[in-house]
Amino acid sequence: MIKIYLIWLAGILFSLLFLIQIGLIAYKVYKKQAKLVINITLAVVFVMIAIGCISTAFFLGIKKATNTKINYEKIGETIGETAADVTANSYKSFKETWNETVTENDNKE
Image 1 (cartoon, one colour):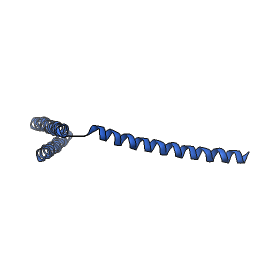
Image 2: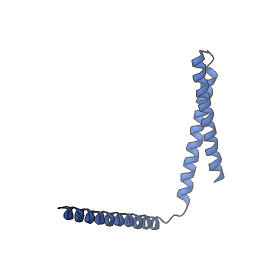
Image 3: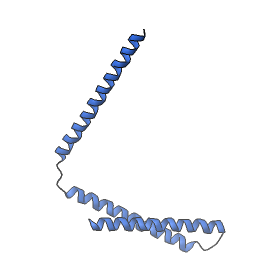
Image 4: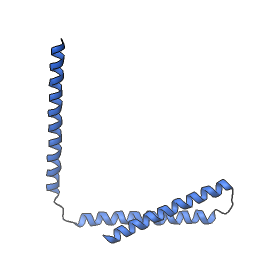
């Protein structure tokens, strides 16, 4: 798991280096300095490394998650029970509010 975190951290660091290079390129374009080749090359290299590291960490995390023994039936039951409780409470609240509103309107007439 530590490898995944380290690869993810490397991806974030190279993303920051890419953003710094983009900032330098924008600054040099604004100041009309002609030497942009090294900055553009570094920006491309940094973004490729960042994408590689982050995607590798993502896929390693997915692989690790799928190798664990998860009881999907139990998770489904828990999610279903929670959703049913929320729906039932929402309906009960709606029904009470509806009855109060109808009663208030009947009393006004």
